[in-house]
Length: 258
Image 1 (spheres, helix red, strand yellow):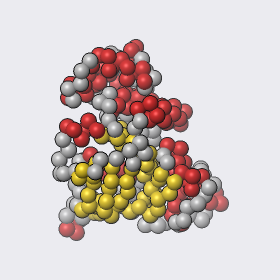
Image 2: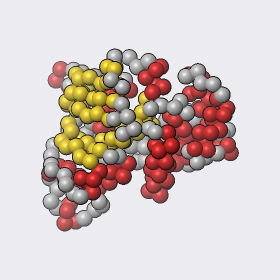
Image 3: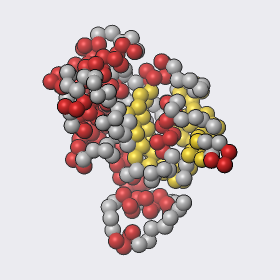
Image 4: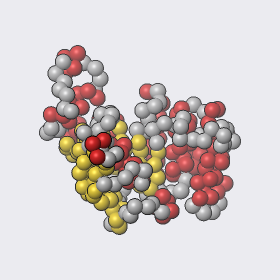
């Protein structure tokens, strides 16, 4: 579905240049689910931004369904690839109703029967027609994220990019959104790249996982290997221990890998 090879992203120039992503390579098969996990600043979200054209690619190549992506992302790309952002409060226009948000996506991509599509996708994300003409300020954080997911899925993409879609939500709401995404993945046959700082969450959502640190992938593993504690790199094992919650004995052994 998508191949990323030797990807590099550099912000700034000269002495102020910062290599946010350094030689990242991975691939996601059609129907596959792939996770990028790491601490804040590890470069995982920048990888998604580079895929959609929101970050400059300094080196490397990205291929979608075998075809190299150029410097611009056209309408065909945006119909095939959609992104759900971390902040459900900032990703929706405050003066647009849910109906307008979804209708706009249909209009941009020239989709037929927009009203039927809107009603169907609202049901699929667990909102229903009662939410159709509400504004973002009338919705909870979880409901706003459901709208953001509906906006992405209404154009029927093949690949979904999920940038920490639950980190801004309460724990109980996080579980609801994760379960919703798993149901939608099965119903729509989606491929996705799921970014998170929580290794346990990524293991639940993805069949294959890449662990990032300082802009690089330090290890790739399957969800089964993760469940069996078969991670080879010390940083990966440390991140797994941290994802299981605070433990004073474990905290005393943590090493700074910067």
